[in-house]
Amino acid sequence: MRSPSLNLLFALCLGLIFHACVAAPDFPDEPVLTFAGVSRSMMDQGSLNQDSIVVFFTFTDGDGDLGIPPEERTGQSFDLLVVDTRTNNIQDKFFLPYVPPKGATNGISGNGRVVLFSTCCIYDDGTPPCTIPPEFTTQDIEYEIYVIDRSGNESNRISTGPITLVCN
Image (tube, rainbow, N blue to C red; front, side, top):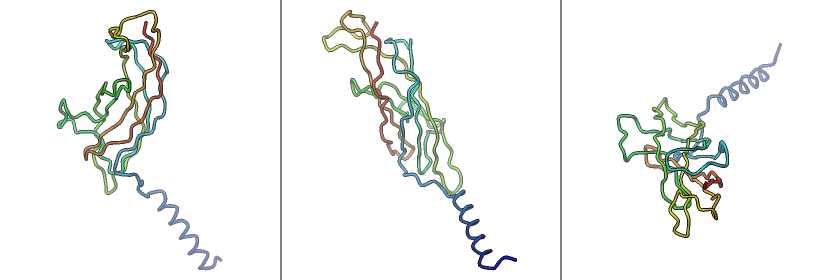
């Protein structure tokens, strides 16, 4: 027969195990992105989506308010933005899937991916973009990606690192 103190210790350990299994995630209210990779490190230039890469990332959001409900989406309310670091301009905008609030704790985490289509090489000497001058055969391009949640919290920016854009 077990002693009462051993039974109490066993019950406490079991309780701690169950508590650890159901504890809510402790994420900040601002979305946090982590770069996970790209499908490839080279693509051909083009202005009509001739080539693409896929960027993979993970995310967390402590209050779980990612995505805009479909009925509230407008042409101005995108929540995933892609910046071309050559120009520091937003190159593309996307809608995240809407995540409805659930339960007492809304912290969420997951995996994401976004397809980025090719763009044109840009030349410092005034040569028009998307042309094929013989002296410029490749150009490095880098994208920054960030999200904005429904509360207006902006995530950190993740970078793809250099992608080689083939200019011919």
